[in-house]
Every structure is written in C-alpha cells, then in structure tokens.
Image (cartoon, rainbow, N blue to C red):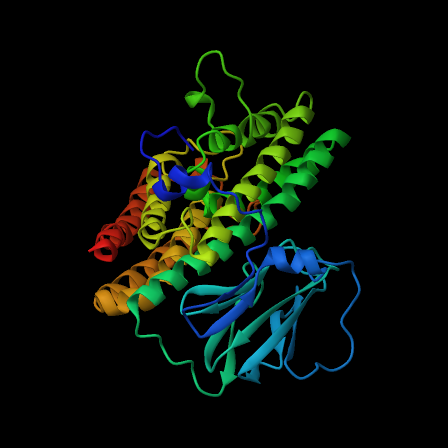
Length: 418
C-alpha cells in the first residue's frame, strides 16, 4: 500500500465519525447471484459454528446437510453433490490436505459461502439458503480444486427493481468484507503468538496466510486514513518523524533479518489496529443493512473493484509491496479476487444497465485468473512463484491480461451513477 491523495468510499468517510450504530456482525444477507442467503463468518463465529477442534464428522448427512471432505489424495469432495433448493448446511472437514486452507461455494463467479483457516484435522460449517442452479465447490490448492454442485428446483425470480438490485449488491459486498476481516484476525493472532515464542518459521507462515485477507478488501481499509497506514504502509512511504508499523516492518524482520527480535509490540499493535478496522467496517455494514447514511454505496463498490486492480499495477507488478518476502503474486491474486467479488455483487444490476458489459468483464476476469494460475508453485510457502523469479516478459504478460479487465471495469461506476 502507498499513500494516495484519492480515497475511496467518500460517503463512508463523511459519515463514519457520526455513526451511532453499535458494531455488530454482518447479519444474514440475500445474495443477488444464484438466489442465495448466506450466514457470514462473523455470525458463525458468534454462534460457535466457525472452525472448531479436530472432531470428525460421522454418520450420514442430515436433510439439507452436505459434507465436504478435503483430503490430499482426492481433493475436495462434496457428499451429496446435489440437494433440493432450500436451507443447506455445509460441514467441511480437512482430513490431511496440508496445502488446502479454504473451501468456497461459488455461483456465477461470486463466493456465496466460504470457510478459511482450515488446517488438517479441523472442521467448520457454513449455511446458505440456495435456489435452483449450478454452483461450484472450490478448494484452492486441492488435487481437485473445482467440482460441480447442483441445487435442484426453480431459480429465484430476479428482482426487476434496479434500485433494489444495487441495494442488495452493497449488502452482499458488506458481508464479504466483514468475513475477510474476521478471517484475517486468526492468522494475525497466530503470527503474534509465534513472534512472542521466537518461532520465525511459524511467524513467516502466519504472515503469508494473513496477507490475502487484507489485500482482498484494501479499498475499504483505505477509507479510514489512520488505520490503513498503520496496518499496511511500506517503508518508502513513512513520513519523517513517524513510526513504521503494521505488516511490513514485521515482514522485514521475519524475512530479511530472519528474526523475531523487536517485533512483539508491532504484532500486538497490528491486532489492535485490525480489530479497530473490524469495528469500523461493521459500522458500515450495519448502516448499509439498515439503509441509513454512512453505508456502502453501489458506485463505491464499483470504484473499489477498479481500485484493487490499480493496486496490482501500482505495487504488485513492481514488486514493491512484498519487498522482503517476495510473495507479491499471492497479493496479486487476492486483489484480483477482491475485485471480482465486488464486480460479481453488481452483476444483476449491470445486466439491466448494460447487458453487454457483464459477459465482457466476466470473460476478461476468467482469462486473467487463468494466466495468473500459470505461476502457481505448490512447493513454495506462499503457493506462488517467488516474485524475484519473474522475467520482464512475465510481468508484461500479466499487465496485458490485467488491462483487459481494468478498462471496462473502470467504466462501471459511471454507468451506475448515470
């Protein structure tokens, strides 16, 4: 991240200080794509249905229940792989797949339910109310990453009210942001514990695990001028007389100096700052769901999608973001996913505003993610080729694929406001 004169989410900035709503979970959201209602990660954590101990799932699945078993040999397997429309609970168990830490339910490029931080031996659950259609179970890093999941019955009728579709997009995006911050806190806490224990290897692993969650929602963090610099400022952007805090001095210590010395206070403060970010984001979500001033606006979601790709061009392609760990491609992929999720929430409305732009941008995203996937490296700690191994030709190819998405995506906010 670098300091910018332009900030996103202006409505949030203007009113965040005046919000009197108490922070709460993102609640239940009705997805605009695939006819789904999903419980957020923060809700799951509050009810005790987030990641639990290593208890295994036994017995046959109950009606409306799907077991998703992740193994090193078979990848990600859902049983059953077809259910009737209605409320569905997914019970996810990672048996022994070291390279898999997340499971997603995807509909038309949008994540409608997911669980993260699934170490081998752990299980978790998430629930969604699903209408008829074809979905994907996606487990990044599994031997079989994607499998088809079918919901029988009729698809939900599409709301024809454009304002309602745009409103739903903001609610869906608010839930996505809240989930990512909830997922982010876990590895940051793990990193702090490892630093205090003097375990460099464990702290490095936790750092790598944490980074994507922040990168997916960075435009939201940047709307809080005090928090984002405290969390994600690079050394070249630190103003004279100020203290360098956040991820990157920790990155320098762990990866360049190969030491945890002097990092304990930084790690503790990072937990405080991310917890504060969570509180502020939950206020935005509460205002969005209540329909009051200070919540997310649809054009801001569109701007956020474009800005995440700007992040790639500004700091990932140059290699400036992860100067010590060289995991820039991991951040690159997270920025692309965050951008795609913001765009996906807007698809139903965009299909009414300009039916030609959705397939164009969707195809460009597919091509970009396919190109990016050629740089995956399962032997690397981050799962990606170390950035210092990329050639100039590699970087040019990635930029070319990125620009094909960025050009039409940058026009979406104007289409919405017009």
